Image (cartoon, rainbow, N blue to C red):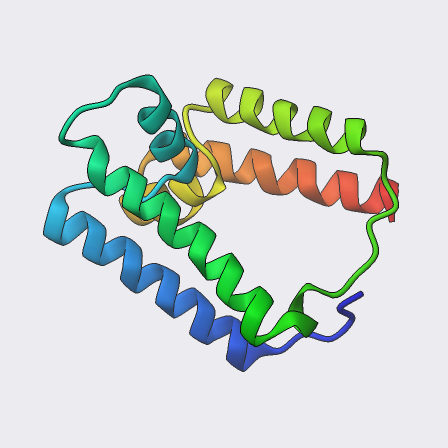
Length: 137
């Protein structure tokens, strides 16, 4: 379990996410909301979905790269039954559908564009996360 806060690596990671989202918006006019990108890939197949597929493949390859080059970052114990993990994933999918986006779309991209809907959604995400962490932990 990670118990220490590392502000330098957190700032670098946040900056890289911000730069990537900005480049996607400025260069291509696209928003880096992961749930919307995944939904679009499965909803339709056209020439515009190619970048979305590459985006998802990049996320998956980044996970593989971490597994190969820094496996200690993935250490931890998850003592939950598989069915519960599947249910949790489905609930996250349902929640992102209801909220018209996920934390990356609302929190990173929407808030930076001063979207009222994104500010409300992100504050709701954070409040529920705070309550859940305090109830479970």
